[in-house]
Length: 311
Image (tube, rainbow, N blue to C red):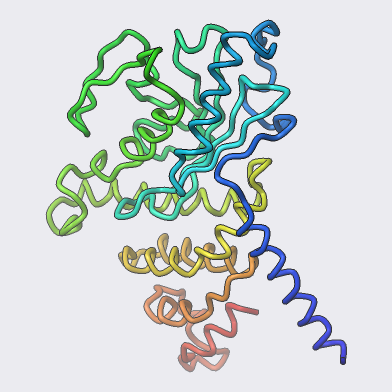
């Protein structure tokens, strides 16, 4: 086998290894220790709660059992034997929203008096101001996380508050995915005809969409610990669909074209074949004239522009 074919074979093995690890990932898993980048790692815990047989420990074990058996496929959770008061979860953005195909990471703390008080949640925002209920500093605004306060969620028309005997972390994660990551927050009338009917609502939708895609770039560069294989494998298998969805929302602006190219580069580097998405987008891009013409002033064709971009 010559060097070129050998290299190709090695790449093939690496790609298969990534996809194989991704297929083996569990929705719920119990790991020995929490990662050092967990937001609540230094929280001053009550060691009595950690003892097997304590009321707190029994409640957390019940939560583990519920998560292991009831988690939807779009939610993954990691818990920790040495820190049963901590969890880390990732939610996949719901379809037909600007958050579709995005990943959203949350660090969870069960306080000493749990479940009398609700869990504390920290959102990994990457400093992106995604929507009014996910603060760039990590705060999650959800009535279910407020104990004893009845708050009307206008976007789903119900009143929710933390109920110690009945509420649990699965309910919280589901509420974040279905209510906080909702297109109704930005456009109560739905996405149909959004650009034509209300320019302000379309701007809000586009902001959420583009920030979701920016978050993908940050995650690929620095995935949260315990989820590196998941992030790599997820975007390996979803890159095509993400670009396809993004192209449908593009409005011709230079900003959206640039973000598309950034996504394209990141997905290609992560092992997804995306070149078939590129020529169509470059054809309509508002490239500077010096990018569209050669040294003699003749207009380049798309193939030449594509070649220049890839090189």
